[in-house]
Image 1 (cartoon, one colour):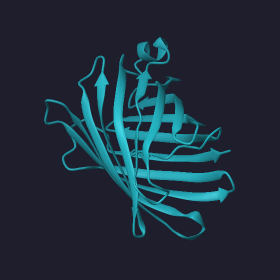
Image 2 (tube, rainbow, N blue to C red):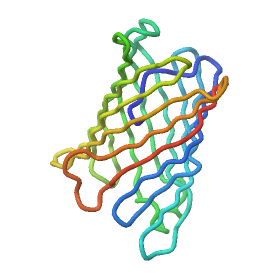
Image 3 (cartoon, rainbow, N blue to C red):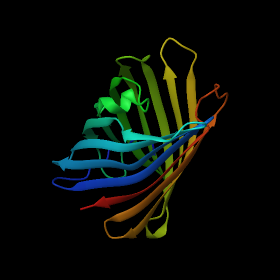
Image 4 (cartoon, rainbow, N blue to C red):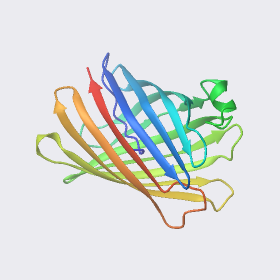
Length: 223
């Protein structure tokens, strides 16, 4: 899901996500495949993250373009931990930048970089696991944004988990607000390998040219 949680891999452990990530807007399909999201645990409360996708863009009437997507570096620190099923809170500063200038020149990416400063919280309430995050994204060449989300999940037998998510990205000093409902699933395949899938649709008024839906499918490896 887009909404993150305070969880970390654990000391000396890896969590690697390899995914197919796609977003459709009128006349445009943007796909990130493969999308690598690599996380490493330093101690029991710290996570180091690097994410880098290969990006494809298909526009009606034009040939398909491809190139390196943006790279993200992040550091998560869980500073409140009352137990696995109790309140946990973390902060997760992230820096995203254009990996290669060629992708900008080709029109795949906007020439931008941003710093995202969010906080995450989770707690189990009865049969439901609640995750929430909120933060500010500071852009170099684009308007700054306030973003927040709430994800509610339920863990079934044999590790199957279903999650529903509400997400909002609001441009500061503007009425522009992109809202999204996302539905996701986590299903273990075998020890250390989990399938993750999600499908999202916008809520409310959708401005002309904005995304119509997005999808995600990938495998998570933990070791």
